[in-house]
Length: 181
Image (tube, rainbow, N blue to C red; front, side, top):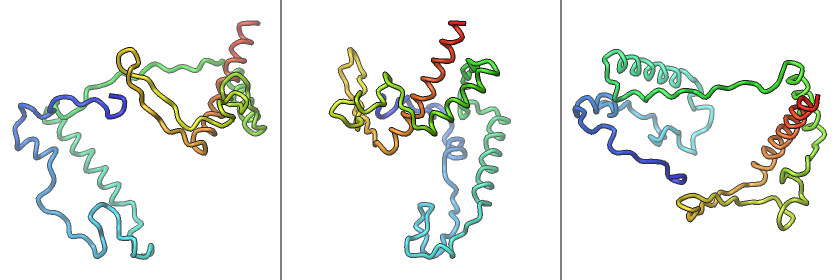
């Protein structure tokens, strides 16, 4: 399930075929494609960039059409096509106003200075084989019997990990100082 997602039974079971075609189908009349257009939403590689349509109007009209379709489905009462509402988790800032200012200034300064806080696995002496891990194994299934290997390219994950570790370290110090006071 982690690798391929969860597949439920047919979402359209018991729904009229014409209704399914109206909302999930394609139009019968396809617009003509310009010369060199692949049909996959991209122009052929051999066309110069200047000939391409750089307007975003199509994207906006597509969004307008989608919004209108969603409003229509809701007004007609076809709830089987609308997603079930999901409650958003409550979010709150753990800092007071002064602490937030201190946190932001501290994070900015630490990132500029490229500080590496020890104990979080971001320092080179904390790595196995003296290099940043390129793969992470996620165990899943009953008793952790399944393993999924996740690639961690250094140029992508190390900067993100470094910033995350700095933020976590600074947050922990601010909250510890609050308790000590």
